[in-house]
Length: 187
Image 1 (cartoon, rainbow, N blue to C red):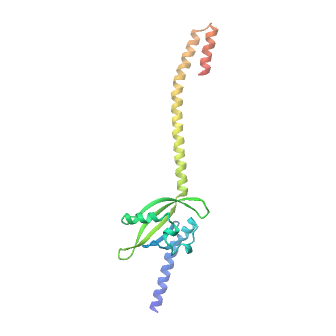
Image 2: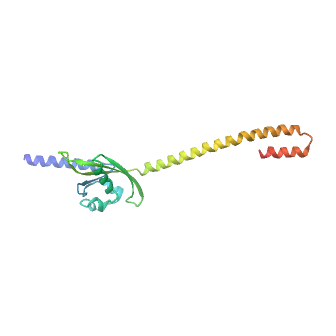
Image 3: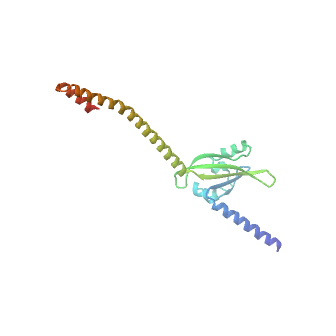
């Protein structure tokens, strides 16, 4: 009876942890020390279009060769969490920009038993970043154009002032007055 209660409790905890994993808004892939995928959540499927049944039990290199260098780099980085941005093809065939975080998975004795990869969809963030950079460039071009206009307007104002003074001095000489009017029209 005690054993049965214990099994029921363990099953409840297992289901609870699985529900948490499946509710994540980020993709989660866990690989063991040999690089074999042991855990794969629903969000990873939504991002990549690859079903868990076709991924769990296979190596990361077979399923996601793009992510293997991150795991290798993590091992060379003494187990500190690292991240890299990657472009992948979504389930719908669209380009997705994902940030991949890699962290070691430790057992109760402090030994590394695998690696967890968290996939965060950064596509919308990337679009907003590109839009903000474009707006910044346009703003800078506008400021430059305003500066150039100011630099041109000042001398033209002086030319127009001197042309009007010249026109007053040339009153009566129609030919020269016409030349001054052409200068003013040009300004």
